[in-house]
Length: 251
Image (cartoon, rainbow, N blue to C red; front, side, top):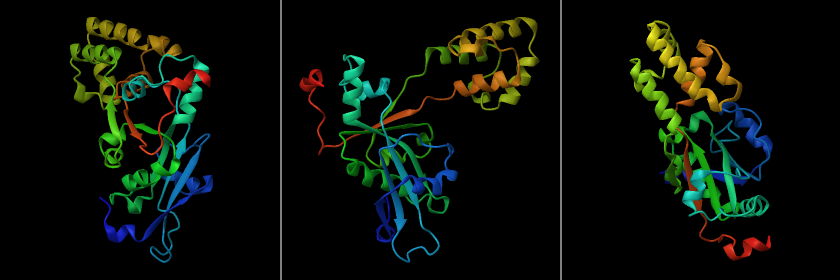
């Protein structure tokens, strides 16, 4: 929880894209955000931290149209509509946290959760959502009062991990592509043919990747797809009710 003494030294203001640009280099996805609806910036009050103009920034964007866990979290509120009506209802009801950055010197102080918690009501939309894998390490979204929903592993991922176990590569070894690739190359013919066939099956849903040949790059690609799926987070604004289901047909 943010210490009272620190909260007295900071303030949250409406921001602009230039505020995001100041801190974008500290985000693992430093490219442009794409279309956004709201930006809020965390700044020091006058003379609180000399030489520092921007402590944190949060960017809100329009929602993705199809999210399985959103349907679970909202009891299928957005399900059973034609696409045009569904998109219209989503755009009226949901905003997505697409970026959240805290300047490195101020991390570990609870500012990420503080920025989320304080700005969600300012967006004035019924639902705020977010997703991410890193939140498993630092659950700041849950600390900001967002509810978490974890996606079950894909069947294809389970099968691929079981195939690795058959050839002696257990789950804990899958973090190092170079070692995994070396172990595959040292396999006997039968196990090598087995895992190669499993690779082909796994890659069927990845377009041209299904035809890629044995290489370190292919091994890296497969391992990145075996990582845990992001957690979905949702927050309901009690002061801004959802559009009535009865009104959906009139949109």
